[in-house]
Image 1 (cartoon, rainbow, N blue to C red):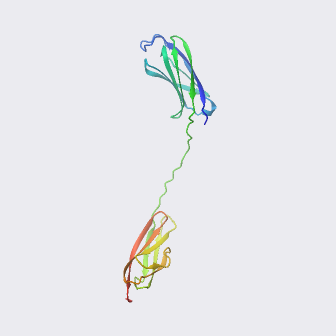
Image 2 (image 1 turned 180 degrees about the horizontal axis):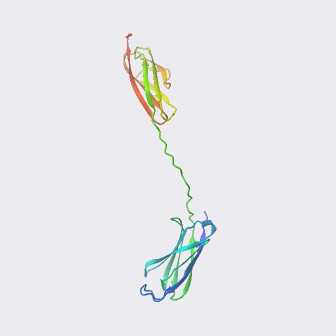
Image 3 (image 1 turned 90 degrees about the horizontal axis):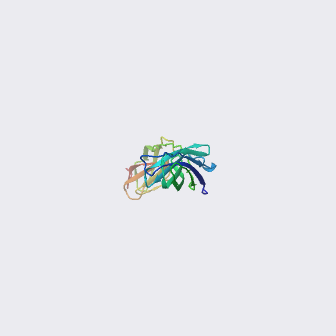
Length: 226
C-alpha cells in the first residue's frame, strides 16, 4: 500500500518559565488533524508533548469529528526543544506516527505542523466460525473362522462384522503369520492354510478412515483332519 501522509496542525499556547511548579502562565492551544478518506477507520489520535525538563509528558486524546481530529493541550512550560509526538490508532493498532520539535514561548500561541507517516495499513479482520466435530471409533461385533481347525493347505472361511456409530464407511484388512487370503480387504473371505502344521494368528483390522481397531484369532493347522 502506498505511504499516506497526513498533516497535523497543532495550535498551542505556552506558559511562562521552564519550571512546572509554580506555573506563571497557563497556555491554551488547539490541535487539529486532517484524516484522509483512505484511513477514515482511525479511532484514536493521541498527542504527547515531552522535553528534558518535563518530567511527565503531556498527553491529549483528540476528538474525531468527521474527517478531523481536534483537541486542546494546555499548561505546556515555555522553553526550547518541545517534542510533539502524534500517534493515530485503529482500535489498538498503531497506524500513523509523526514528531516535530518546536519552541514554546510564554503567553504566545504557537502553531506546530507534524507530518504523519501512515505507510503501514491496519490489518484486515474477519470472522471465523469454529465447529467441533467428534469421531467415534468403529466397533468389531464378531469375528468367525469356519472351521477353527484345518488340515495343512486347507481353507477356512473368515468373516468380520463391524459397525460405526458415526455412520462412516468401514474398510477391512486381513493378515496372518502365514497362509494367504483370497481377498484381504473384504469383510468375508477365505484363508488358505500353510503347508506346515501349527497355530497361526489371523488378524482383522477395521478402520473408519480415522481410527483403526483390530482383533486377532488363532487357527490351528494340523497334518490330518481332527
